[in-house]
Image (cartoon, rainbow, N blue to C red):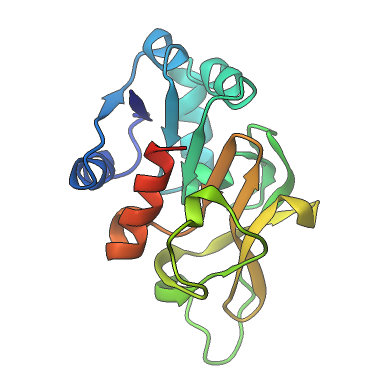
Amino acid sequence: MITIVDYGMGNLRSVQKAFEKVGAEAQICTNPEEIAKASKLILPGVGAFRDAIQALKDQNLVEPILEHANSGKPFLGICLGLQLLFDVSYEDGEYEGLGIIPGKVVRFQDQPGLKIPHMGWNQIDATRPHPLLAGIPEHEHFYFVHSYYVAPDNDDDVAAWTDYGCRFASMVARDNLVACQFHPEKSQNAGLKLLQNFAAF
């Protein structure tokens, strides 16, 4: 069973419906004990980092998320769910993240002609083959909505780069853990293929 963590931030139903489209069953869950039993876990999210990390703490979800990430079982972070995996975010202050992937979350720099947030379709350039990108053409476009991006300490953790005023990590991967800055559930056929690949991961 694919379990989607519900901590009150993000359109979880759209993620669930995207899995249904590719023939995979996914449940939305708020219960720490149920999340601890998940065979595959998804951490989605839309909104402010500070509010999200506090919500995870308030709902006692940090421990089961960390245990799953370290268990070897498949784990997928989406958008804010990617950013939460890092050590620290500088969104409206300085806030400690889950510390699963070394690095930080920083804001796009203001540049002439560059709109922030980064919103809309942009291409990803994979650094290496990955099971979640199987069957997806090179330089495929995915849908983004974000003002902050992750800066991993180690380039080996980066599975794909994207350019938007600078080159940023749009997808990270380490062992069982994968996370993307873009929204696969909003990325039409390419996004559905990625979620189908995760269901089989």
